[in-house]
Length: 196
Image (cartoon, rainbow, N blue to C red; front, side):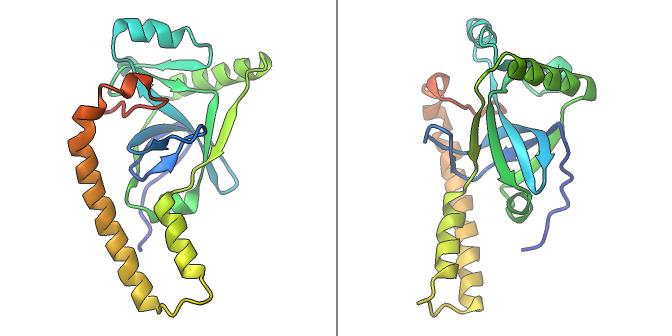
């Protein structure tokens, strides 16, 4: 698969269209995250969510770890970043999957405020939850690829990979059609697809 020409830097907003598990084991997909930093070969990401109402906005902003990120700061919807949750994503994986895309970039002044907010959380000894993002289909594919008993040729592996890409596209279309039903549960979800 050819590498994408997607420039990623601190303050980039990325969309993750592949399924992965949250720190508490929930299966997530179609999530937007802010690149807080890049360390070695990892993107350090913070999840983003939207406000579903004025009351929800007040409630979410009472949580000290949450950082407001509104339309006036360059966001497409009024929302917030969950600064106490750090997700590690390997840059190679970002480059190798079409379902991972750079979406836009937070403006510089607001990103500085985000960095200061995180420093204050650290000073106040807020616990940061950390999790490496592992995509389930990638894991299954790698297991098959590394299986010593396998008689799969490179050609067969390429065919499998193309089929997996088609399946992911069908799943994406199915998930979009199911979003209406999921909206009722989103307020209780740790993440939400805030860009809908």
